[in-house]
Image (cartoon, rainbow, N blue to C red; front, side, top):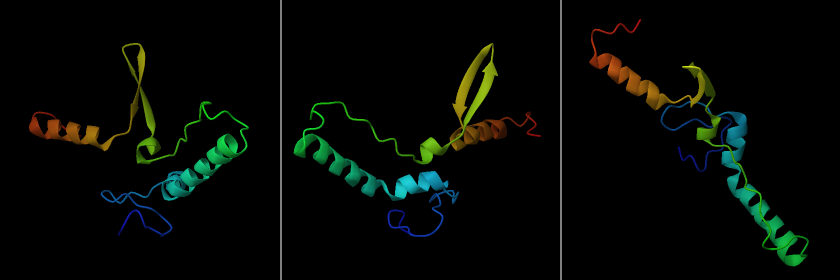
Length: 107
């Protein structure tokens, strides 16, 4: 399976085989088209018609990826709210620590 040429209904993560959410899949699969559309708008507005100065600030395109699809989790620690992202590597590290300490009960 080539992830850059995938044409199926659901786009899975190559390693975990978790299905990508629809909004993230749309951005990942159409990134070339979105870039070409933004380039065409740039040329039309700034070079061909001079509607906007060529040196004017451009708005950044915020495409969604796997990293941006993770849920935020808020934890309260010592009167402060800490926002964490769900992350499998954090859980994996915790599991390694738990297994290295047999006196800890995982249940």
